[in-house]
Amino acid sequence: MEFRIGNATLQLIKGDLTEQETDALVNAANATLLGGGGVDGAIHSKGGSKILEECKQIRAKEWPDGLPTGNAVITTGGNLRAKYVIHTVGPIWRGGFYDEAKLLRRAYWNSLKLSVAKGLQTVAFPSISTGAYGYPVGEASRVAVGAVVDFLSQENKLERVIFVLFTKETLEIYLRAAHAEVQEKFL
Ligand code: ADP
Image 1 (cartoon, protein in one colour):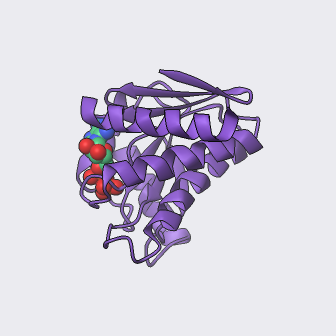
Image 2 (tube, rainbow, N blue to C red):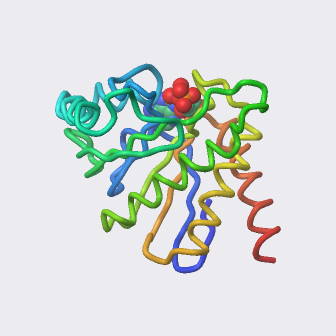
Image 3 (cartoon, rainbow, N blue to C red):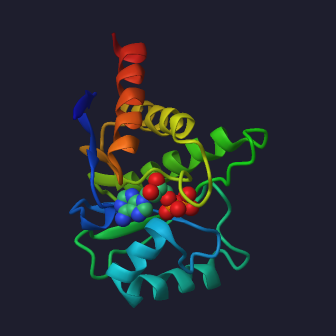
């Protein structure tokens, strides 16, 4: 399913993030940047050790105490089809009382900003924070789609943003959020 937002296309598909041929994939990383489970594990195992080496350099040079939640950094894509990987840290869900929505929005926003700063045109996102980090998918989908739609409405340099959802259920939830968002903001 595709939506036109300004000059850009917002696309939602069911699939494996690590197979995408976009300019960048966004990794649902953790603060250590040293790998983990879920999307992070899949990116590092398919992308090879070059990504991890670059992450270690970033830790050493820029973030010795770890990447704060909501920030984003970029490495090359190693052996992946995507040219770059943007590593961002989503919030751990703690009942919604600790600015989770703001932090999740910031993770999407900063990943998109970094893509534009790097001159990239196509970016693929997973459903950040809704795996190990426990963010309820319905709420996360509204924040995620809202952030991307707002960004694309303000910034015309990106060509395509794709949400790559791992299951049919997650895709359906994100599609509902996208329909609601587009209806509210553009109709
Ligand atoms: P977080 O720690 O931010 O919660 P996870 O990687 O645990 O991140 O999960 C985020 C979401 O990504 C979950 O919905 C999970 O099912 C999904 N996911 C896991 N592997 C992949 C993959 N290869 N491609 C796309 N989505 C994936």
